[in-house]
Length: 304
Image 1: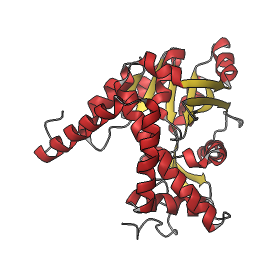
Image 2: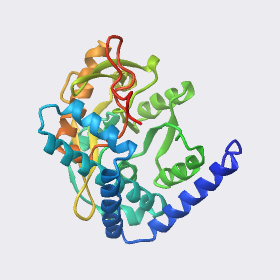
Image 3: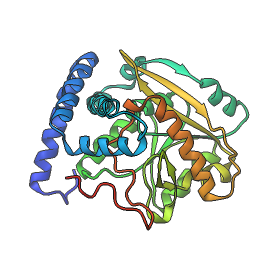
Image 4: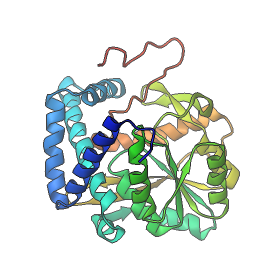
């Protein structure tokens, strides 16, 4: 545990980890039920995450009726809570316990075709379903690395790292040395995973539409694909009744597009098309539209 943490932070983290370990001992089906209960509690108590979720859904789906949007907010809270508890289960279970939860894979032929052609693969996607479980699946299919951002709670870093690395996936941070590792990984024919629905630093992104608003969108995906001649595939692990279903969809736009904004627009359109098919499983509590370009009013200002 990092020495820079205060005693209170250490105690909070130890308590959190203890709860996660306890949860991981429960049957997977129980976690789904408990997650559903926690999600409903989060919705009815109108937590901060619920407020952000509601605002994002209002911004992205203005055409929906008020009742439909509220139903989506509630279902999103349920799926988010289930994701947290499932992730705790994934963190403390062995890979051979996790893999049977993947009941179906759609679109695997796109990945196999790219590998048969000798092309490296960049898997991208959104934070939907359960991405922690998904990493265990992809690492068993191919030598893999993933873009990694340190969690705000630094004490969780070794736990997350240990969990992900047990599957064989390599963790690469976004600093200068890390970016070089990303390219090296692909040039060696490996697979790189980067979830591109979250905002980069201002120097690492451009504004491009995400649903109905401009969102700061990472440009590293374009650089990785074009400089290594990689195949770009979208993927996610959707929650089913008793496990997960992996879906793989090839990017349907010109991967040689040189304009950063146009590439980012296409990248986001691919993400939002997939999100719109299962919006309840997307992580709406993330403040995706901060910052906005000049001339736009902040959309989260009054949310406590």
